[in-house]
Length: 475
Length: 77
Image 1: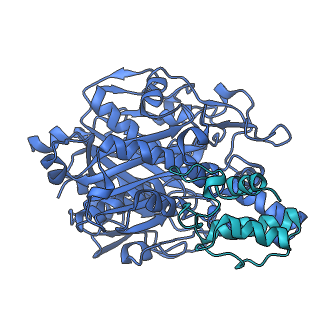
Image 2: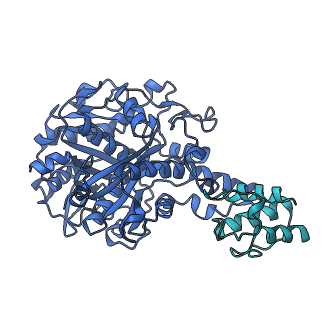
Image 3: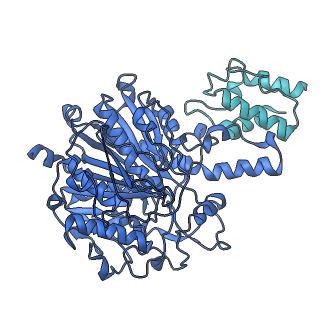
């Protein structure tokens, strides 16, 4: 079964709504600037990507306002856009015919900070009743489910930036298992003091104060990233069912794989790879993915694929419904330069049945941390040959959006397919050593197959292949 | 407490459903018909306890009760 994206909704620092976002993105207009949501002038990092011109009362019923954090409001508005874009009317579907799986990385921190502050300063009776869920990391899936009556499978995946792809992959599983329509993607936003210090503690934020010098992936001057708020919501459907109502969609979720780099102190094995729910292969980990992090696997639905996402070191959920051949590179002992990310790329291409030469572009994870940039550049060069594929990172205009980042990249990839143009990576002067064909100005190209990469703090690597719908029909 | 004050509290704590005009005409409707849920009532009674020092229990009003009943409870307390 082919699963396609039929609806997109966007709330990004580069624009609220699909049209504004895409116009700004192709124009190379960055949404990064000094933090506006709170006074960040006393903090070591003071830049963020914030969604412009967002007045929640303009978009949402007032019943929802007292009970929602900023990032949930963004998710609700983007989901409204995505569902309308898909032309789906949830009320017309069978009761359990539509589900929701989103990614999250933190939760409603701005709301949570306010209520914890009330608790601390004034006492328990001053804490809002809505705190019971408004700061919970699963809240977006819950609120989307309630608002649209999505009573099919529901869940949330937490694996930092990689989660945005993991959630979409899990939504694809649900469609393949028979849920007609699944709303997915991710939306994050913790631009508040509490969220800020948590992000600072990660140690990867840029301390630059000039927006055009702050987030420079694959540049010799790379010095960390700028965080942002926003993301994208996607509507996934079975291609044949969509075709019956005359919808071809933006493109197909053609391939996916995830690997995990264990923390350096947990010695055994290396990268654990799980494919098709049956094959487990271990290959050495070469990725210095960083420090141990706390992983909070979560699920609102008892689903074995989600529950396999255990604490650090465990196997990540992978594709349970297709059985592509596992490439030789990952079937046993690999060479020392074979990172978990590279294995994820190879497995995702195999899942899609795509050869590296067929891939028109790669949307990079673009950590802007030199060691991580090197791992990614080497993985891309190893699979596609040096300068063998166009690579871009439009997230240089938004900052890294955590769980919202990869869904936004998927949206951009699908729009690239639609319009035959690749969005640019801004401000970066690509370093020679990475041997990347980095797209630094909008590039017109025939775009049929795109690979999107996303890594999460603590060792998560995810890769997803999207393909033009017409390409599927040609095959 | 006046009717308008109470309606303002409802508006602040729980918002207004899209098909409801929150004015005096709703005083005798029940909270469920106004689109509120138990959590909204928790938030409203919590607000009355904190900001108005009204000794009102969390479960003093239910979804089948009306704003008028809540107003009476507040003013009789």
